[in-house]
Image (tube, rainbow, N blue to C red; front, side, top):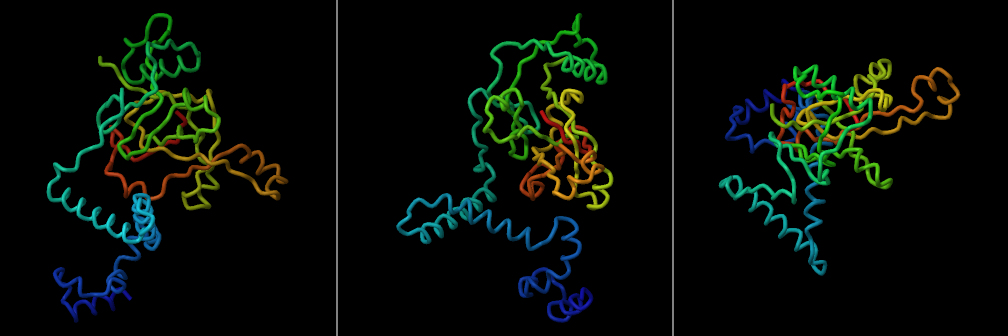
Length: 292
């Protein structure tokens, strides 16, 4: 099929880029189906998501309900004109102002309130051990005070370069109805750090059977506390309970292996909607799921 398409294009427009618009997209797309599906998933889902997302956010701008479709078309026209102006004159594309008391820490990361008004002294033994391990590993033993005490200022939220907001358990657990956004994917001056609790490694059998798609892990709580650089956080992920079926619950081996486990769910197409290509300061591609 691919060879037929190449011959067709050679015959009718000599595969010239300036004549590509004369070829039906459904024909030329045949050349891209296999490589693009492997790169970013089924192409119909990619196109459908973009279209529905655009319709949705344009629809939210409709205020004249007496004539909604005319209003919708005008909003779309205004969006296209605005995007064209920003493309021609990039200076017009201004970043939205930061919220009050927000503090940028570089590379597109921004600390957001709430925060401690004064230094907070760490008293939890497991947290102290995690801090000592971090500073020792990073060659900063001078930051470890006598007696192993640490004073720091806590922030409740961290805005990532991709637009997501990671939240800390410090403030999020106060509201039982709040949506959890504290699960993250990570690869001589004051430093911004994050204390996270790592999940276990994925179940190897399920990972292999699902072609490296289903990552089933268990939460290890305070036994797996680690301190990381806040700028190593890549994105916010969902940790969804891995619910067993009735038949699986009757199997003691499966119950022991997968009871009280979670699987990782990432926001679809986040890589395509984010301008960030490598948020890790070390440029590593490997990632680990943690709870902040």
